[in-house]
Length: 518
Image 1: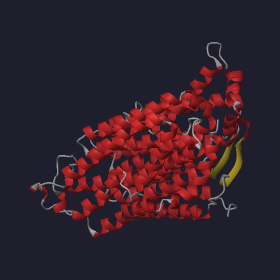
Image 2: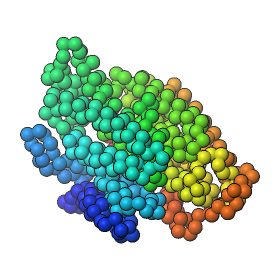
Image 3: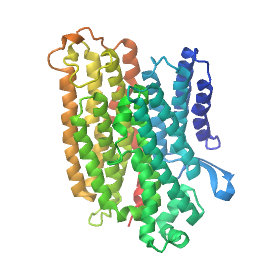
Image 4: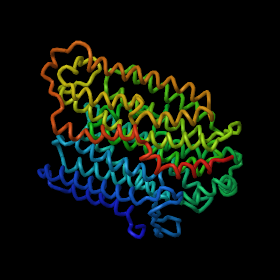
């Protein structure tokens, strides 16, 4: 099975498909839509083949491909998958067809739109599988370019400002990331993530940085923190963490529905993935030096974003801030796992629980957020462009199926037991409480505020007296119900039997927890 270059095949499918579709004549709208959807389903099939062939008990990277690319610069085509990468690949393969279906009615420059979505998917696949920094960085940036144009060309009234802000923020982060890794290369002559992780584990990376790059004004510790800070900034902007978040609400609210689904469901996970693939393995010592500020920064992100969501009146902006809140929980689990846990009887077990929860929450939030933004898009379409919290009321009477299905997705986001959002948060808090008690305890405030604003959505939009303006608002038709059904069903499956995912990622998590031993 490993003799087949499955990862190259997987990445090439949307890359080639996107280049073909984007060059179709503008009048070939129907062909562009169906060809793109067919390509995305083909990528999903390949992702499922890889998922089924993946050896769950193995801690080694699987499906590896290694070829020299630019040997003098230590640049290799090196790809591979562990549980973390595989989980993100599967999420990407699921959400992209959802985003395409949500964008089906886009009628302007259709081939370019759907071609850009496929190129964005190729960037995601490459980011989640590449193990050499140069190769990884190319795909990291590839995902940025289609997203910029998707916002700029098909967004709302403020699309130009939103696209520019998104581009500037992420580009600044990317430049910081690139400079930091160039410094690492000058000190170690390595770009490979696995080799750099080994240097980080042995504690030899910092001395190498000091020896090759030491400046008189900077101590070894300060130099290491500067380089660590560059990588941290590039990833924190992508998540984003407060205060690097200000681009997100405008970008999410102005982007077309399908693009918002891609950004919330997938692109934000690139940042958390980078923390787990790069910062934790390569910079474990530096993360411990600044662990307390990182934990409190996460607490601020969780509580502030939940409060900001509650203060909004635009449904898209509410869900945008809610995304920051949920990703804050993921980083809470990651950062808590960096603490020593010396006073605990089984610190490795608690770290594994926190990390399992973080990975599971990444997947669950990606699925739920994409579905919620799809529902808001459908509501905006029916509401003649309106999507305000106070624009509706009593819709349950005229659109009961719509309200029921969106209610399930909202309760999933809230973390209701029996739905997918519950298990990830439970594992995060179960592992994080013993490892970082005070930050975790304060983060519970975010859960309370989240429950309040989600119940407010249900009350203001769906319950109460019917606004007669919407007495003829149509419910979901049969086609829409069929299209939304798989996402809703998956929320129940993962809520009742999370072992579907946990069984695949646990070996990777256990190995990572062992790597974090003091």
